[in-house]
Length: 464
Image (cartoon, rainbow, N blue to C red; front, side):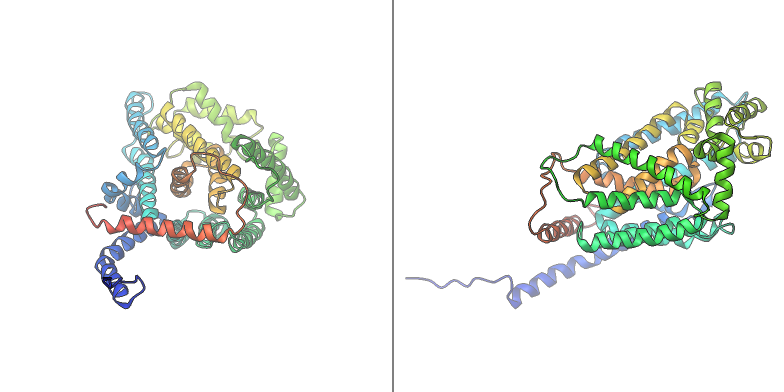
């Protein structure tokens, strides 16, 4: 005798009511966690200083350390970065103590040089955890809005509001908003190109040559990722980096010619002419601090330490190194900017070496490895986002030509993007043949990400 068995359909009113009840039980914790992650991302982007370079975002990131330390360990490379940072801090204190007799440090200088680096590391950790709770696009947008909120507080904002204030936050916001669209879809590509085109036009008119070059290169690399598949074998990461180098060299020559012809404005034309005539090269003429860095490295190979003041001998060696490049160092720039309150050589590699010694050089190599690895893998597997490509290009530039203080805010966001990409990178080379219907796997990937975040939040406070 057959017995009728009632089977509850998942679409029945009772099942939907049960699902709503279950979801309501988790809503309070989910909302609280999402608000906390969003606030941490927003404050990480701001430039509110509490004391001696310790930012509000860095303090919030430090308070959330018990949560994000466990999450950061899930990303390959994060643990190595933490070890290198700790080694740098210990090396800075050891160098400062060792050189105290000949290079007396200042207490304020030690804090001003160490606390911004610590704040950036805490912010990067908070951003990694935030992407575990929210989507990467939302985290980037909140970070950019926070950066926009304090864009007017820069020391050079009045000189050029776009170039020294709004350019970087606006770029992060627009490219971060593009991350909210379908992954690798036509809408995403169109939004990336419109955003990059508008940003390039405004930035070029402001005379920012390097920023314009990064935006143009990013647009070209995004288009290269969407090229038709001509072979079954994927492009290697090394070949992709060679492509980036060739593209950068060609773009450098093109922008140099455009600046000399006056297409980037009279100010950029005058600066380019002076720098090219002084050193025979736009890069060496625009960054004569390279000569000072090499001269100081030859004089003191082990570095100087945090908060260390330069001696007249150091200044003379730096001036001689800059003179080799055709730069006239007797104009007050060396005394007031480079050695006025601390040693500043206008490059991330150079500053890390000055403050942290050999450990700083190792940390610089790790950062270069992250940026080049992201570029190589992204172009080889066609997985890079416009934001990630832009941040990788900018980090590569800042390592050689950007001062550490202005390089730290975008570096914190770049670490969140690069480390996240390393975790999600496939272990084997995927089949480059595009699927016949790409929208379905895209939606499935997005749903999997949403389900992963829901499972993480479902654990409640004990998991976080």
